[in-house]
Length: 323
Image (cartoon, rainbow, N blue to C red; front, side, top):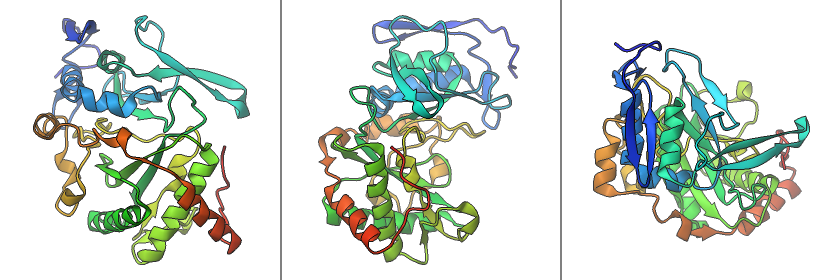
């Protein structure tokens, strides 16, 4: 088995009109499967259109594993030194700390493969783009099961989410999380700041909770949540909160992938079956199931009206709005 100290020859991958050098290609990243750094790069090549669509022009945090999953995990906001001049960045500020970071800004499949060369396994983009990083164009619905909540509950709640989105006239784009939950993305007009998007997400989560009170919680403090319920995590829409993108591999031993699915698949889907070994064939057969996401844009105004109603009725937000 290759190790963090291996000396296997580097390989060069042709990615469109660019060449990316992969050092230590035989280094094992995923011990449960034996999948290597080169396997990871080839996986991302196989879903190139999908991963670029998910990341395009968004500030992106990289979750890096320099020695594979058996080593340290690095949450990398700033682009590592030594990047080729064709790798682009976008600057984001952190006023609370009087700091900024020039984060990876994917515009080409080679950017993703270069990030793999830098030991990136997971890609966690913002829900805004570099044209205006303070105005999200993506509303994220995170179905996060508590420890004693099974995937059958996730399936039922996804059905409720779909029902409410249909009533709103919004198109939701579901995907597995690569773990035990699901995500649903909705493209929105970039007319609001993070605080308003989060308020809208909370109003939606409360509506889902009203319709499925036995399955859903919006309780803010984790210690106060029923461990048998699913938390609709509206806070994933707060500024600088990120979740794994569509087609991102997860940093777990069996190399699961956060995989787009159709609404009709959800009743039968097993998220553990979506891995770097299986998703390439699925992608080759089905294409990118999120390919139409940029053409289905929703306005948050109905949800902000729900938020105003809830607040007028005394529904407070214990987490506080972030903007």
